[in-house]
Image (cartoon, rainbow, N blue to C red; front, top):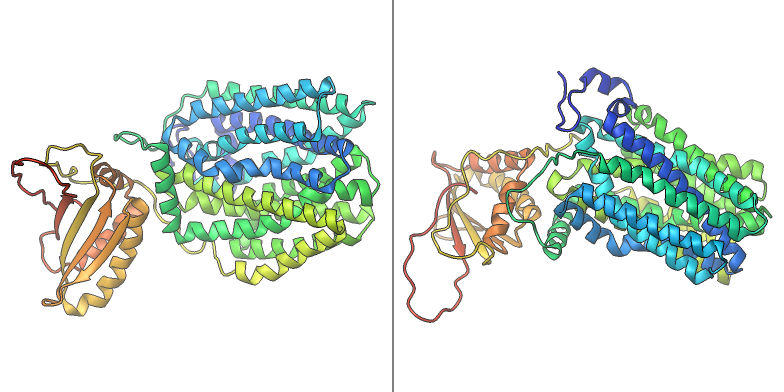
Length: 562
């Protein structure tokens, strides 16, 4: 049976099972993928040229390592804001704005570099500005994936996106190093790379301008404000164990692996006595392995579980860190880095898939923003620590410390499982009855609101009911409740009362929109244990604030639509 997606039309299910390249048959995704690949090549050329320019401006390993921090810190600071804005505003317009921001930031840095008016702190500042754009862009960029391909193709799509980035990582660093080495002055070579990177954003902007977007989830209610959107996103993360497991695995992995990325330039220059081209080849080796892994992940996932992929990758990178610390032969280091790049992409692509498949559409960008914050937070904080250790001791000690830390934390991290069991159905639930209407003449933003639901449960079903209702607790809290409780009548034990609090009536209406098919299955299990044929009695109460003067009486609002 063909699958339907509002932006792409039918895709044959047999093709989905047989190929990891099926998403590229969708024209819109293919155009986006090509433009993104070209832009990523420019980004990795810039990464190499910028890092090497820093080594020519300063001898401090800490300042060199801070280039990684400048690239990662904006995501740590802005990831939640980026996710909130991507769930509130039109993602297409948002992406066009931030792509333009990045084009302008790199363009100005190119001019300053050409004229020789660049210092270590100027380079760090513009790298930071560039990555502010990247941080604000990334959640929206990843959240549009379900709008481009059917849900069944998301794992292959994430792998192809990883292949795009890592294909760029394979050729970009070498091209960046080659271009810097082609000029007598490092400033001229680096400035040329920066200028090319600025131009590479134009292709992505062109694809976005021509995209006729059809959102998968569009609320009929007023948009959340940014602060409220961030709070609801964090609340969702707090009560989503599957998502939490993905975040723990992302942080523990990137924190220690960041030593490879942040100190590779120092290893190339000081220990291996290489120039910019040699550093580019080492960096490109990581990308080459990543490309190989990204194009074979479709088959790897069919043979190995997510936990097995992450375990293998972690243990192998312990070896990689030790090789970089003590081996001085490029003939050994290069193939080691190729496999490290494969391990890196296998891990991060698997975690990314777990995030995208574990959340519904209404919170997807915020979940991805939280993931990017965690991911880049590990990179940024790790880069600072390993750079500091390298500056005050030596590079081998820093790399060895990272290897030991990765090995020691592995037993803790492996307790957090991802992509286990059947995936939840996040299709929005279609309500059979409209939302209850307020009898009180008040604004829907007034609150808090208490929803009270009365159940009658036979004593023989009590244990099963409490198990089901506590599963429902997570649904209520994820979807917007700020407090929840279930209480048993001390006089009549068959009567139980579920109570949860929403910040406002508008938040209650939003929570109804957020119910998924998987959530409804839990609600149905709870209702099935209710003794009577009629639904449990539900009342809706708005906090009574003190007022002056008489107030007209209104009938209470009550129905079964909860």
